Image 1 (tube, helix red, strand yellow):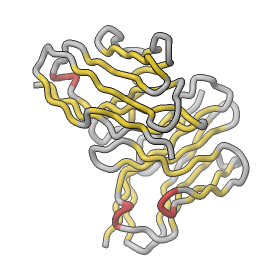
Image 2 (image 1 turned 90 degrees about the vertical axis):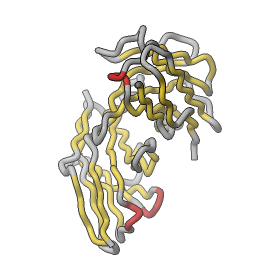
Image 3 (image 1 turned 45 degrees about the vertical axis):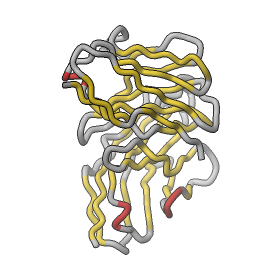
Image 4 (image 1 turned 120 degrees about the vertical axis):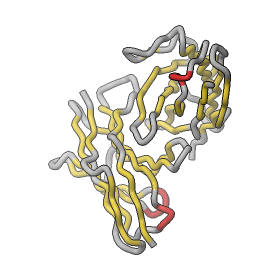
Length: 113
Length: 115
């Protein structure tokens, strides 16, 4: 099956620093990737849609200057949380679209101190 | 518009018994339907999907789901549950008339299989 790799799986950072999360489709090309945020015991909240070679489309209420998304190739999208604050602490999950199906990464646990 | 409802927050079954996790959907066009499973601190694992064709879809780990257009349902089933099936299950839908590939997820159902 399709494999999506997400790195890092866990990151702890100081308030005010920036954190980059990578999402790679390992065995297929993904024109479209998605970034989600998940709070404990809740469903996924779509943050943005990332299209290769173009600007990301952000969902309402998501700050595009805070959550920078780059999709420079058909196999890699990155999410950078800029000037992170404790309220940004969460579980971030990416997915890549292939064969009319979204395949998900393992997620990144971000803890901002 | 597209949406999914998972009416049960929790499902508890004994190991070896049948497991059913319910899902109903709403779309304007035709649905693409998906089931995913999530273990603690992990991403979502794809179990199965319905795009077109046979209403009974078989997926990973012995799971299957039946697409019922008249009842707008896509319930997930496993004939004999295992303790290792204990996890959070999400149903998702996409309207085939959309071109943005976005999925709408249900709230999730926590399955607990007791030994």
